[in-house]
Image (cartoon, rainbow, N blue to C red; front, side, top):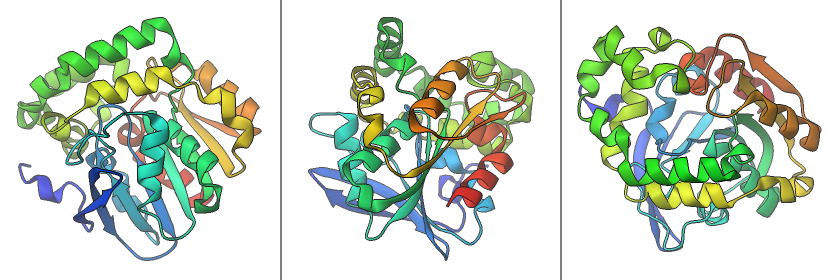
Length: 273
């Protein structure tokens, strides 16, 4: 697997200019619109395994600013991310956000309630990521960009059980063996393209969504991996409590649940959209 254009089969890549940012966005499918938002250091390609399962939906899958093929925001903030994403939408949509994408989804629902019909927050960041330790970690990852190094060896990693375990470890997933070759490409392929991962990480660390959750009125589902070592399950309980939302926990699953259990995530997205 070497052709990056095939990572989101059936979706067509295009570009969208808004607020001084050139966004790369993948679109395709027929049916009610569903917006997919990836996490910190990720890209639209993160949904490589999940997107084909979302039959009967018209998908909108952008690279967030500073990630993948999208340019950076002049002044990165999660509010800015949400406002740029809002310019992609011409009608109300269902939104599925993973990790940092979950916080962007919350900001979108708060600031543009008329554009968001429902939310699925998959391992949403935003609570623990505002701690001092998480701020240092996000800044380090955004500066060093370790995924850029492994991204150059993605062909080897995708085919090697040993390398998958080494790269993803237990911090990212519960069991690296369940990641398909396509999923590995989806998570690592765009890492060399990022233009401002540091800005995104600092924006995430500065943002505490708890201050404005009472303004989110969209119907919401919280989805978590039971063995998430990156964002604690306790954050899921707090989000669910504050949003008065149900919480679904996926057994034997870590933080990258959209690649570990794309079937469960897709089913939740379809049921909730």
